[in-house]
Length: 182
Image (cartoon, rainbow, N blue to C red; front, side):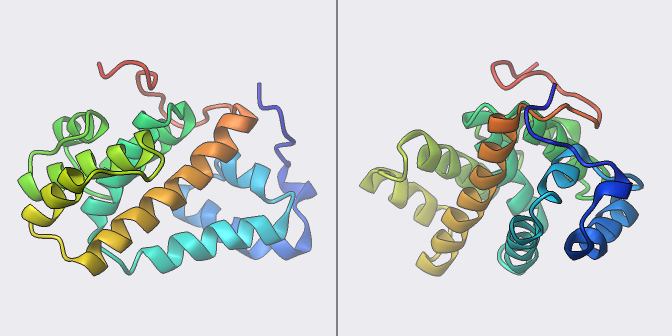
């Protein structure tokens, strides 16, 4: 059971209604994470603005790969379910590529390097090695793109932390927990 308030639609503050309406239109319902964030319209706006801004860096499949790799490394079951759903339904990723992203890899060698690097960022708390940087550079990523990878990873960590603190009830198709990959 979620530990923070998940607002019903009639409880959404005026400052959050527009954002929540947009989320509802995109998904066909309002996922619990967003209904929780709506209790603080400023936090909801920060999360949505950050996600919207970061949609302009890197391609969608690379961002989805980062989200899956980071959520797995950080043990966020809600985010794994959400990112699996979004990656498959909106992002065009196959089940195999989603499973590989969770494992820090990809069917695409360039995205595999991103997945490994993103997991290293999380596991090392940003203290990646020179070899980690060389691996992602060797896959063809420039320093500005590496900055984007780290920023997307941190944005995913933000929602991972919110959902882990809340123990958000999973209201989308569940996937195997973060401790497993099957």
